[in-house]
Length: 322
Image 1: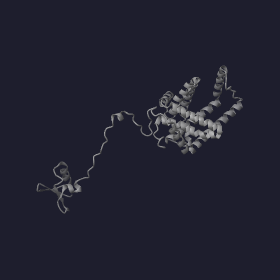
Image 2: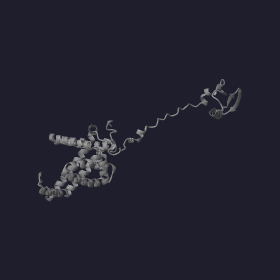
Image 3: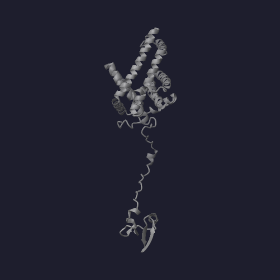
Image 4: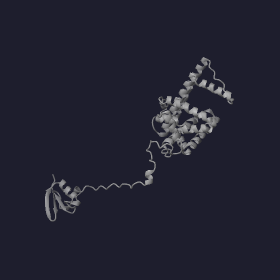
């Protein structure tokens, strides 16, 4: 083991070990100007000039100053993938539409495959149901478009009779199930999270019973409100995000309606505008051709997903083009 010698005030001391020399330097027992030497050195040198005795100086970390009081009191920005406080970021219509359009173009093939599965499954169920109705001699009753109040009540009873047919109920359940799956797919595509293969439309089986009950409550509520028009529109906009709430968060029906009311609080006009735009696009495409109307459906579904994404996550990635 190498031994060291040192000199202080004209006197020589040693031999000592390396650890003792370092300890003396650290505690003031030896100054950096004091001379030291060990075997192999050509001459005595000041201790401060020998690298072995002086580890590299690590600069102290510079800490930022405290945040201003106004910043400390403000809302905390959520991390990527976390929800924002409900209703805190009103929808920007143009950016939301651009986000939906961009995502639709990037995933056109996935949406085409998922849509094909949807239409084929629904059409197959409809054909089977029609065949059963034909075999049992059932005929769909004719409905008056402009009924009197008496006929209107009769029409409601007739419609109820149509809906409770087993074949019709099965078709409605299949359609609700696949629509829920498409909502899951479009939301995953918008958020770049989870599965994005077409088979994801068959995944939300466990959510279906809860969604069916919520659908009945929602449409009954909107139907009753529609007698005065504006209340029906308001209820539809305020509580219309319940399906996404059940699908994504597995909330109870009451919690899903409450959650929808909170997240839409500051975006009712924007949601109304998006609904009118979607309706106008659908009518325009139907006037062109049925094929055009079908082609625009992925974009319309993506608009709904983009709106929900904005309401719950804000504009973090809508502006960034992710």
